[in-house]
Length: 473
Image (cartoon, rainbow, N blue to C red; front, side, top):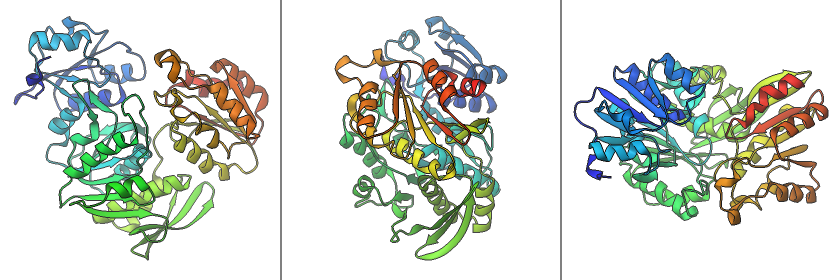
């Protein structure tokens, strides 16, 4: 492909998007349509809810990738990161000589514009942290724009076009496009950024932790003296990355030495009440429906940004109380016969451990039944085989589903769900292995009892297990 065509023309009216049905690409399609551009798209999996969303936006979407989808010669083609170099439409780009770009390039050009970028990066907590920040800015009357990797229940959307000075962006570390294998976050120039955590993940993209850190290093090298990084100071990798930077760095954490620190925490169900200290002095006390110390730390990083932007503690407090959280993050999908079914996106071992630990205190009269589907390109590999047995300690019962897409992983690299269950049982955990989702539903419909929490963790749809389980309980 002629790399000189990787550019955005000065004048653009008609835009085609390859792999438009991804969460991010679909949101960008909506933003572009709302901004007045003529938008078309194509994908090989056009199904609800994204198909309905795009149809409601009057965006024409073609099922399948074909050269003729570009026959009308759009002014620009945006290429999603799910598109490979051999994709028929990607090949047609070269043949037709059409200008093209990646999703982050398009966001910078058509959405971010002259706005000040507030970006959240890190292995964990990005979606929740971005969601809190967007809601506080909204409640402060700052009319923010945002582009986030999950649906915000306060807005019922993962994007918003605001008229204010700020745009909240989730800084995804996954690769950008087939012609740009670096993370999406390196494309943005943040006015302020949060770094929540840096761990090894995305084993299909990164070789090792050092490879991951090299891209966070690239981001920090780009941050100017007038920009600010809000860094979690209990992460050794972040500490290493923060050495000798020109940008201003303010830290947050719970160790008592942070510029922004967590104070006392108490549970007043359904509320979590937490104190916040600024430079050793009490800044305020806040109430939230978020659970778990990790989520309070996410909120703390946002409070640091909000204060920097001049938002008062009282506005922050009212926003924290009315914040509903993003979907699929400890989201209660329903309660049937006293049994709670909760959906969570957790898949990395750290996220699984912290999620179970977070919800445990809120269900003192019943059991926490953890249901886990290893589905990501990392969790289906052996890389965390010996780590996963250590992360379910706060669960009373563990149900592990056999990965449904193991054929995508080389045989010698595959994760073994059977071995995980065996290792859990050696640790005296009440653990069970299942080959399919139907078996899990049958087992839980007979096993669960009033007071139990069934915590379902997967980054995919998990065969609609949540609704199906609620029907049979």
